[in-house]
Amino acid sequence: PKDPVGRLAFEHAHPLWIAQVFADSLGAAAGELADVLIADDARPAVHLVARPGEISAEELALVTGGEIGPYSPYAVHLDGGDPGQLEAVRQGLAGVQDEGSQLVARALSIAPLEGEDSGRWLDLCAGPGGKAALLGALAGIEGGRLDAVEPVEHRAELIRKTTRELPVDVHVADGRESGLEPGYDRILVDAPCTGLGALRRRPEARWRRQPSDVAPLVKLQRELLAAAIELVRPGGVVLYSTCSPHLSETLAVVADAVRRHGVVELDTKELVPGVPDVGDGSSVQLWPHRHGTDAMFMAALRKPLA
Image 1 (cartoon, rainbow, N blue to C red):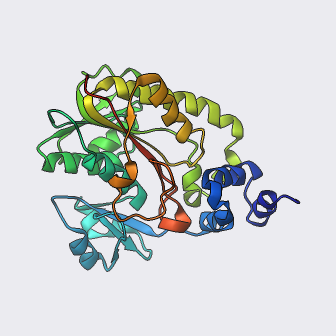
Image 2 (cartoon, rainbow, N blue to C red):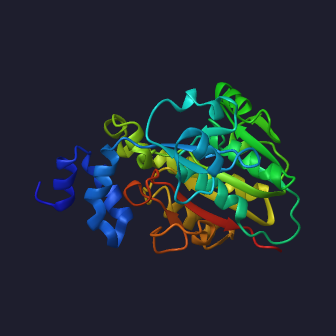
C-alpha cells in the first residue's frame, strides 16, 4: 500500500479501517500511529486496583511484589502470574482492573458538583462490575450509595459478587429504561462500544469487528447518555466513557449530547491530575503507547442548575 496508514496497517497486521480510526483520533499526533499499533500487539501488564478504605496501593504493592501505578492512586502493576491466586484478590481487598478504568471511576468521584450533594451515585452500564466496585467503595467513604444497572442476569450476578461488601444495589434493567428515580448526583455511562481501545487484550477481535458495527453502537451510546442526563439532577455530573478512541463513539456522541440536552462539558483533564498528553480539547483520551492503559475516552458533562 502506498498511503502511510495502509502501509503501517499492513506491517502491523491491523485492518486498514482500524488503523485509520486510530490515525483520525490521534489527529495532529498521527505520527504516533506505528507506536499505537505496536502497543496493540504487546501483552498488557496486569493492573490491580486497591480497594479504597481496605488497603492502600503502597500496602498492596508490598504484599504482591508489584509496583505502584503512575497515575491512579489505587493502581499496582504486576509483571505477570495469575492475579486470581493472590491473597489480597481472594480476600476482596483488591481486584484486577486496567489503570485507565480506575481513572474513569476516580474522575467521576472527584468531579465538581453544584448544589446539594445527596450521595446518590449510578453506574448505568455496570457489567461485569469492575468500575462499580471502585465507585461503590468511593461512594461508601463519602457516605453515599451506588445503584448499578445491568440488563443481563448472569452479568448482574457478577456485579453482586464483586460488590457484596459495598453500599451497592444492583438492578437488572436496560439502562435506557431503568425505571430508576431521577435525582442522581453522579452517573457513569461506560457505554458498550467497539472495544477498539482494548484490542491488545483480544488480538483476534481486530479481525472480527467490522465498520458496520459502529452505527448501531453509536445509536445505543447516544440513547444511554440521554437516559443518564434525564436521571442526573441539575448541578450533577454525568461521566461518559468508552474503551474505544473512534471519533464517532467519543467526541461526536458528546457533541450531540451538548447540542440536544443543554449539558455543559467540564474540563475533564482536571479530573485526571498528573496524567500527561491526554489530548487537546476538554475531554480525555488515554493511549496504550502513552499511558500503558487501554485507549479509554472520557468526558464529564454537568446538567446546569435551573
